[in-house]
Structure formats: C-alpha cells, structure tokens
Image (cartoon, rainbow, N blue to C red; front, side, top):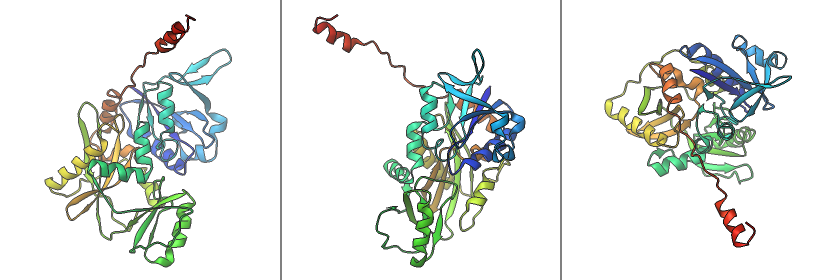
Length: 347
C-alpha cells in the first residue's frame, strides 16, 4: 500500500505537523510513502523523501526544489507542458495539526474530490477542534468533563473564580497560549496571551496532582486500542515539551492501573469514538478523580499519530486504510424538475 502523508498547513501548529511527518517517515516501514506539504499560503508541494528534513522547510528551499501540486477530482496532480501527471497513492493520511487539518477544511477537500483518506471526517473535526463542542459532545454521551467557563474577547473579565485555574484558547492544541494562573493578579495577562491566538478561551480549575491517562485507537472491522499511557507528570507540558513529544517514535510503558479502571477508560474512549470518528486514529486524554473517568481532550490527529502507543502501528494503518467509511452515492435524476416542466406543458 502507498500512503500520501499530507502535512503542514496554515496553522499555529504548522511546525509540529512537519515534525510529525518526519517522525512517521522513520516509523512507517510496511508501506510506501509520498509526502504532500501544504505551506502557509495553502499551496501544495510534492516533497521528495530525501528532503524530509526540518531545514528544508524552514529555509523555504521547497519553493525551489519541490514540485507544485494541484488538487482535483481523484487526487493530486503536477502540471506538465502537455498534460497533468497524477501522484499515485492508495490512501492519504491527514497529518495537519490545528487549523486546516483538524478543523475540517482538508477533510472537506478530500471528500469533495473523492480522495480516500485516514483522518477525522468533517463532523468529527468540528466536534474535536472546538473545546466547548467537545465538552458538550462528551456530556451528551455520558462521559464526564471538568467544570468550565467560556470567555469571549469582548466579555467582562470580572470573573468569580477559585484559583488556580488553567486558561486555554478554545480552538488550539499543543499547549500554545495556555497558562496556569494562581491568583487574580495574573488573570489579565494570561487572558491577553490566550486571546492572541483565539477570540474565545476555556477556563477550567487546575487540579494539583491529578492522574492523567492517554489512550489511542480506532474502529476498523473491530476495536483496535493501544496501551494506556500515564504521561510524564509536570505542572503542565508547555509548547517546547509538546514539540518534542510530537517526535516520539519509541514504545512507551503501560500505565500501572487495575483492570477495572482500565476498562472504564476504554469504555469512555469507545463512547467518544463511536461512529463519529470512523476512518480516524485518535487519542483521548483522560483525567481520573476519585476513580471516576473524565475526558480532558480529544486529539483527532495526535502527534506522530500516537504510533508509540501501539504494538504494531503499521498494521493499524493497514486496517484503517482498508475499512474506511464511504460516502453515499446520490443519484440525481431530475425527476422533480421534469415533472414540473410536464405540468407546465413544456416537456
């Protein structure tokens, strides 16, 4: 099978997507790879595997050495003097973190042009990209979430909060714009930082020493779940630590938890995934308080696809690629218009 890894995008997480793509180049051994880069101007480029190095992008060398692509029905094409050449691959992999990849834009493009892809579909993207929608979705499914407030940029900042709290841009990942504040004196500055990235923020209580667990998985003709990881516990992982985290390619250790808690976490994951995230490999991050499981966030396109949580990541890719959801073919027969024309005597 040949995979086309699509990465980059017009996003604050653009660089992290590049890191993920470079990591997967070394991880994916059982499949052939093509690399399709989307730059900040949202132009598509075919990247030679030998050029999959961070400096190739940061120096903008790709502008001189990479072939520009156009997206059209059925795939991506290079422009030639007499004809366009199609880039041959079986399935695309959406590896764009943040805007463009996780907000549904790329999913819409790929579905519109009938290109098979691994990744969240449009509805799944909308739900997981916006932290408020994620909370509402989880609540609807009966999965607990931490209490929260949403504040817009023009709202009154005179908030009644019990500190410490954590402030997050509503539509951003990778800890960008996130602050932990321990007193009211720090509130204005933290909000100013978050509003640099989004016009709405999420405010949650920051709970010291809370237990956190990560689980990745997919449904492809049956459930395929990773091990449950207990991530390194620091006050919180800032952007730099998350950046390094996205380049992980070594297997991590299984969390030391009992079977009952493991089953609770898995059941919560399955509720979240359900039919909404079909065709995607996602990672859910959970909190555990008094033995109760709370959803922290959904990562619809996790860093380096959470390869480090699976026993056989290459096999997982194969399973998803061969069990992708399909769009219903809608037959357009113009029966309604033809009947109107007949009724008017204009048939």
